[in-house]
Length: 230
Image (cartoon, rainbow, N blue to C red; front, side, top):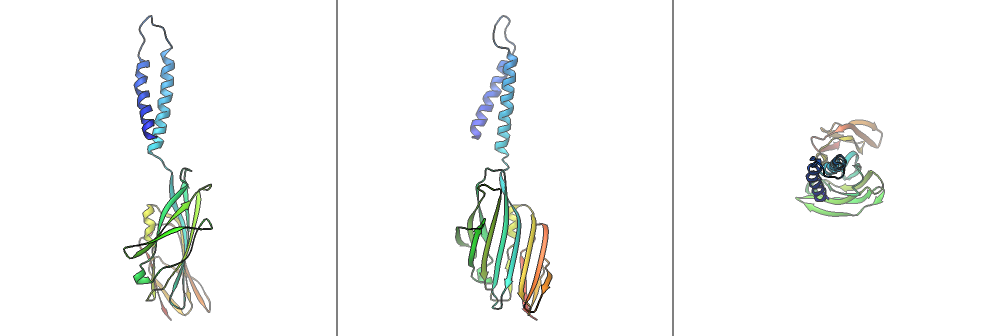
């Protein structure tokens, strides 16, 4: 497509000066001003198409997330992630992403319970790279500019600590419009977290809840939490 546009543009640029030159006296023919106008319009049109071809802004953006970590009595951690994406332009129908999991040697084997895209069960390719398990899956934008991905998985770390990967967001080279992180754990536990800062929002006889809501979030580090008995 780009080669065709470039070729047509070059032809129009070559033809334009030919018809722009004065015609010899006494020679009949079409008014050269007509050709100049037509060729100018063609040139401008092709120039615009060429500009669009080289500055195509159709892309997918990672917009927001809500992460919930639930620590259980057996020291396992249930992770639920909800992620929202948007496309600009309608040329993109599908878009592949990689979803990374925390180190299995340190935080336990990953047990994927469900992965959905736009509330439908998603197919994914599961693989391991440099000790880190990842899944490859495809977002769908057919008929909509928005896409929602949900994932639920469990890990059981040997120690009372867990790291959720946040820094992968930086691969998108833009801030999240909103990031919500929730941590739930038994009321008999004490939670420690240095980054990002989590505030206690609710505690009852059985469970304590912590949360963080940030806008324009561009994470500097991963989320690392530790817990212990009171």
